[in-house]
Length: 123
Image (tube, rainbow, N blue to C red):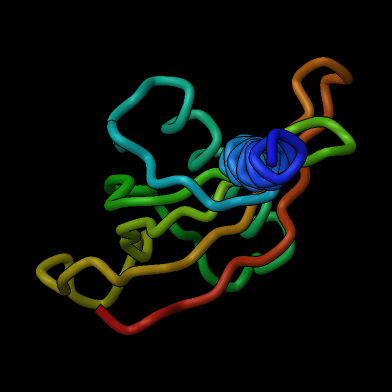
């Protein structure tokens, strides 16, 4: 009887530990403060990298609307950010900002940052 309770306890403990690790490594977590200075720096990096590849249009960051982070088992963090963007020198300065999704991989311990995706999304 004691063995049955021990095995049940071991299985439950294993499930709880797996769930806890999944929340830290591998699972997307919402960003609590989109105005965080470090987060805005990552957003500016994403816009700058996009502008390097698309010289016909210069985008300007208005704000970070929301986002999620995901810790990578190999190290570093992925940032999935929804950015409010304006087109520099647009025909009409009154045009509303456009939302873009940026996916950035950041490995500060190795001083590496990479823009993985950057595309327009619907508001």
